[in-house]
Length: 275
Figure (cartoon, rainbow, N blue to C red):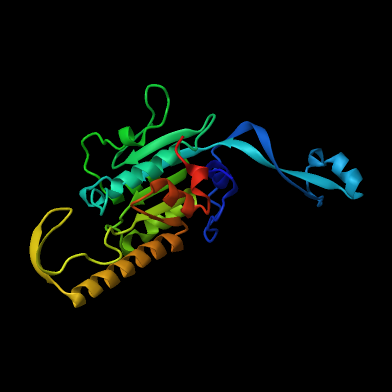
């Protein structure tokens, strides 16, 4: 199964608030899914007479309508996403969003969403370029503004992928997330802290914040333990916030953005690999 198939079928889609159907407008064809016993109300034009003869009972062809999707993406490119142990989290985010847009086919539309702007992330030859798309027109990234822009501008039923560390989210944003979870097919990838496994620091050190600021601090066993616990508790809270507001969730791993996207959909990495 491909990523596009998973979006069409709503694979692993939460249903607590509504269907969040990814369908935006109808296409011209249909994809066969399976045969099943006829039930009253089925379209008689879907009866498979050959299968009916073999089974000695009416059999209906179940089809997936061939629809065009709107694939939208929000990618946090703020300084806190430009850190990592071996490479920047933003590199993994760009891999994930490139795989996301490359799932598009036919009349599907791709939209990059940022604070107060939208634009199609396609190059001169039509190939999706996540890295080109990540260049905002001089507007600093703001996660909440980007979410509000998506809520206001995207068509109902759009498939939205949002990638970031989500430090900005708190209880006041649950209503926004819930509304988006009802209106769109939403997927959030939460960037895992590069030092999720523990701080590799000891003694008196100087720390530089990704978003600015410096501080001298002593790092001992207790401090490393507290940091590890705090990082894991925060990640769990962010994931729970998205889940209870009807979002599909996954972890953005620094080493492989495409595989992180696949994992969120329960797919194999090869099924969402960048072409």
